Amino acid sequence: MIEPAKSVLSKLVTGREKGTEQSIKSLFESDQNRFNDYSANCGDILFDYSKNNIDRETRELLFQLADAADVKGRRDALFSGQRINVTENRAVQHMALRHPGDAEVEVDGDDVMPQIKGVLARMGSFSKGVRDGTISGKGGKFTDVVNIGIGGSDLGPVMVTAALAPYHDGPRTHFVSNVDGADISQVLSAVRAETTLFVIASKTFTTQETMTNAQTARSWFVEQCGEAAVRDHFVALSTALDKTSEFGIDDERAFGFWDWVGGRYSVWSAIGLSVMLAVGAEGFDELLAGGHAVDVHFQTASDSENVPLLMALIGIYHRNVCGYPSHAVLPYDQHLHRFAAYLQQLDMESNGKRIGLDGEPIDHDSGPIVWGEPGTNGQHAFYQLIHQGTTVIPADFIIAAIANNPVGDHHEKLAANAFAQTEALMTGKSLQQAHDELMKKGMNDEQAAALAPHKVFPGNRPTNTFVYPKLNPFILGQLIALYEHKVFVQGVIWNINSFDQWGVELGKELAAQLLPMVKNEARIQGRDASTEGLLKTFHAMRE
Ligand code: G6Q
Image (tube, rainbow, N blue to C red; front, side, top):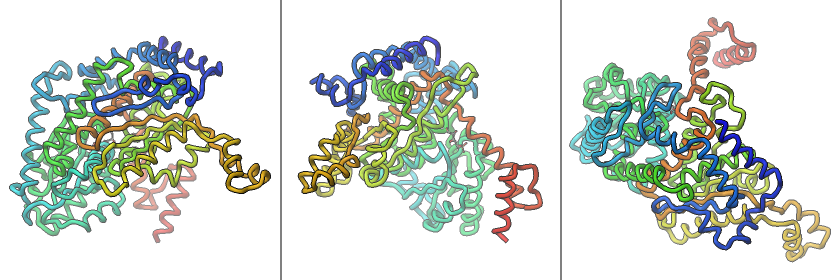
């Protein structure tokens, strides 16, 4: 954290240590207008952050913190295409992918819009052809699409296709990511080679898992349909177009993107092809438009209306002032069942860092552990800990006003549960209340006194709530971009590089060294005693 920001943070910490913090409930009691004052809109999305321990003074200090960390200056550097990913010497310009109209967007001084529009137009005509059957395979119209990718080349398309399931009117989509052969076997057993389109999604086209799965899919396909049909059944999404042609993919079937698109920000690029195949180019355009609307909002909304800024600052308060280690994302929207997994990568790969931009270890916490599951399922599993555990876990609740699948009163019940949870987390239940309730149920005083402590809810647990009219491509694009910019702002305040991911390298290097030893016991050497022991046991069990 840079010096001016540190001194604002210490004011926030001192403020909390003084013990003057009021309970969230009492903040509502002393301010009739709190809901209006502590909520903001980004287009049709309402962001309610009133159920946090944040009062006017704290919020003002948080805005000062953002200014002291130069969030606005760094935001402008981001949008102007400067190489802010310094450890990889790259610009970060995924916002250009969702930029509409004819205005120029620069990376290193060059307008990148013509190339973006060129790829988007090719994706559009290819998707249209696949969807209407004018582009077909050996067995006629494609019925299934298999996306093979991992990390950023998987999680975005997986999450978005799941979220937009009600809008699917194209071929069925399947995703293979894990190098565990179970993953590809399951998918291949569910499709027919003659009517399947394989989409090999890899920015580098060298990733072990993806290339292994791609080769397996290719051999399986060739066995049934022959080598000549590969050109019609395989497409590539990559920045390494030389490597895609070596794999046997026709240049016409390769859709490029650029090094200034980070993997976890790439669903807006050619990596989103499987989304476009499922929902059509118009749906994909709507997704992009939603993302762009948030880019404009982030750059123009005032501090108190700026949803990604508010999301980030509340998160900083929880992490760096209150010391909360984790953050839950709880969508009450079944179609968002992969949203938390997607955000785990976005947030934890971006901000799970311990070295600052100055190359020195940082002296404060950075990214929290992000996790979650859709409500109401989580309520019957881990919410126990959120309500009564020893760790406070701030949570985002996400709910649509209108269901995509209206069935009876399901949606009303879903919404009632979502609102009930945030209320319960805030208000809690006192010992006296618990005791009185038990007495009313017919227990005697002794029985009630014994059980009541277990039924106490401390309350005062912070939550944010997002409400939007209905989950559609535009709203989804907004939601994703809101979290992207939240992560950006937090990275700026922590003064770390949110756009590299060196932490994934060491495991990859060691896996490459260990593979020969896993294949051949005689080659085991030079490892620690535990690793050697594990390798030997592995071999013994395979005999
Ligand atoms: C994301 C990361 C990482 C990446 C995967 C797949 O930001 O860079 O998750 O997306 O490692 O890489 P390829 O797309 O190059 O196969």
